[in-house]
Length: 168
Image 1: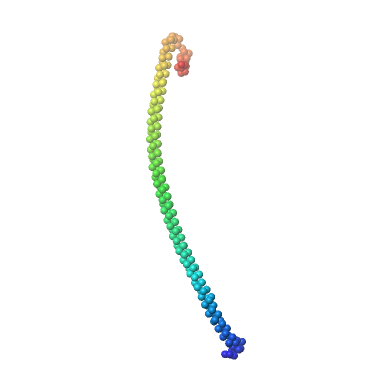
Image 2: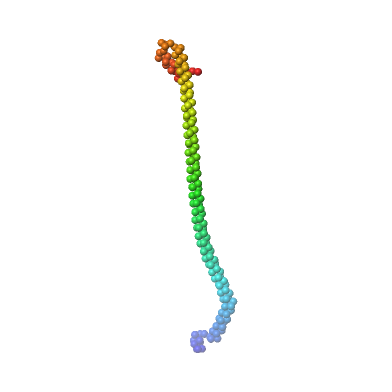
């Protein structure tokens, strides 16, 4: 075996010392660097997993909040529709009341207008009657003053003109 090492150009003592140095460095590195590095990686992995779990929980809560928001919006929409229907019903009731009041008011106005028209008509009739009486009086007075032979068309036109436009 020694000839094999010599042919390859290796010194077995040197190889053995290098192997011992390697294992010694391996043990020292394992104790000082590898274990703390593994612990650090475990802690990091745990934090990452915790962050992922919290993110998943946050997503789940966010989805729940989204559903709650949709429910609240639907409820608000239902309430809004109910308020609108109520307002429409109240408006219809108020409209009926206003129309009834308007009909009553219209009937009152018509009745008062009829009464006023009747009163105006009666007043106008009284005025016409009084004017007619006055005209008849004047015609009789003038007829008595004029001789029946003197009545002609010009006199009749003059009396009619005075009757249309009496002078006070």
